[in-house]
Length: 81
Image (tube, rainbow, N blue to C red; front, side):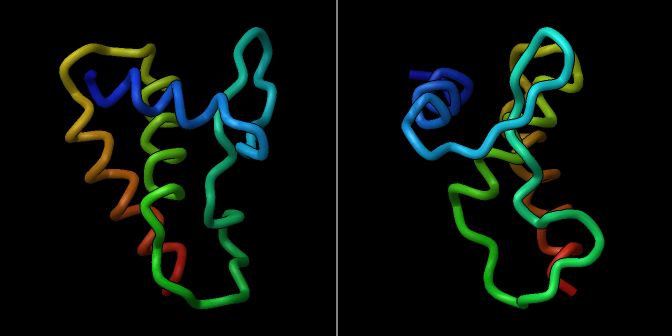
């Protein structure tokens, strides 16, 4: 199973945080944007959700899952500083 399929499956679980952007539903960035008050380690589920958001935003390109994962991890870590 590829990374995108795993992301879709995990985000379809009850309790997955999403936001509606027009016609599609995408994950909410886990960092809560610039004013993240609590410093805590980035968790795998947060990275997964944010990588999925990046993938959606870029038009769902194939073959770039690892790049999206790395970008999501980096962006979320920056939010925690």
